[in-house]
Structures are given as structure tokens and as C-alpha cells.
Amino acid sequence: MTSQRGFDALDARIIRALDHQPGASVLALARELGVARNTVHARLARLQREGMLAPESRRLDATSLGYPLTAFVALSLSQNAADEAYTRLGEMAQVVEVHSTTGDADLLVRVVAKDTSDLHRVTRAMLELPGVTRTSTTVSLSEVVPYRLTRILDDIADGASTPAPA
Image (cartoon, rainbow, N blue to C red; front, side, top):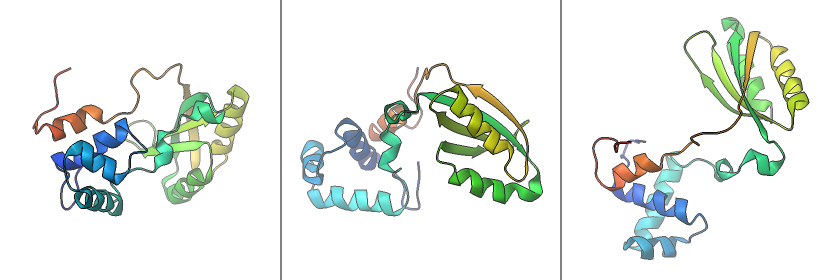
């Protein structure tokens, strides 16, 4: 996680503190970290301005919103229609993440659904998008290791130059 100004140990400590107390005020964070309130405020403003902080909605679990099923859909595209496919995928509410990939597929799309019938509807809608030539769907049975950057934040905050051992 780098920016033009960099991401340093204090930035990592601030984000780690927010992970532990998402609703903490700037003043509470400053007290916990032992730094000036204005320093914490300026750091958070910079991280936000530089696009380094993800939207708070990423903290939500799709299951709590009524979408307990997660699937990954690999899409193959006709290259002349890729931009339109990107746009249309971005408009689909149940598409929560899209990655351009190498390998057999061009995109890996993470979707959430209410049930298998709902997933079928979503994947059929994807197949009808302009430029989509093939799909392959894999249903997630369980999340074994959730998305996290905690250990990387710990390394940065502690000044480690290499990832912590497993």
C-alpha cells in the first residue's frame, strides 16, 4: 500500500486502531496512539484524498444483507466489447468485485446471491452482456481466510521490511 508520499508506520498504526474501533473519533485515536489530534486528522484526510481508504461498506458482510451465497464467475470476453462489459458489470448490484486476469478467462467476478436460483439469474444476465463469450461459475462453500491486510499493517507499523512468518 503505497502512495506518492508513502504509507508509513504511523499510517499503519492509525488504520490498525480503526480496525479495532471503527467508530473511534479522531481525538480517541490520537489519545490511543499518543500523537496529536491534528496529526491523526491530517493523516486520515491524506489517506482518504489519495484513495487509500476503501469505502466503509466493505466492512459489511453480504450475508447480513440477505445474500448468503458467494460465487466466482470467470468470464471470457470478445476484446472489442470489453469496455462495455466492464461498464455493465459495474452496474449490476450483485457484482461486488471484478478483476481483470490472465489465464483462461479475462475477468474474475465475485457475486453475491440470495440462493442458487438468484445466482443462476445473475450468471445468465452476465452471459447476455455484449462481448461475453463464456462463463464458468464456482460457488464458495466457505471463506477459509477472509480478505485482510492486518499482518501487512502489523509489519509496516512495527518497521518490518519482510512479511511476518506464518
